Image 1 (cartoon, rainbow, N blue to C red):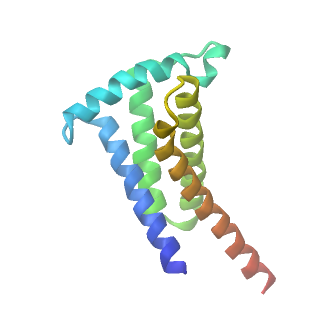
Image 2 (cartoon, rainbow, N blue to C red):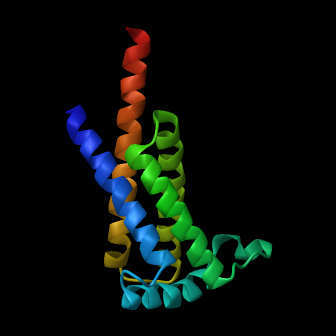
Length: 139
C-alpha cells in the first residue's frame, strides 16, 4: 500500500509543478497561459484578503501562485519528508483558496472539481502520513 501512496504523492507533486509552470510561462501553451492571465484578473477581484485592503495585482498573483505550485509540487514529489509535509500544507491552502475563489465567482461546480480532487488527495496523503507516524511512535 505504501507504493500506492508514494505513486500518488509523486504524480500529484509533478502535476502541481506542471500547473505551476503553465502559470509562469507561455512556452508550453500560449493559449492556456492567456486564459490563466484573464482568469487571475477575476480571481484578484475576489481575493479573500480584499476586505482587509489587500488586492493583489493579477499578474503578480498569477506569478506567485505559479511559483508556489512549482516549488511545492517538486518538494512534494521528491523532497525530504519534512519539506513534503510543509509543501502538502501549502498546497492544501492553495486548493482551499482556489475552491473559495471559484465558489465566490459562482462558477459551475464542475470548475471546482479539479481543485477538490487535488485537495482530497493531499488530505489523504496527510492523514496517511499522520497514521504511519503514530504507529511508529507506539511501537
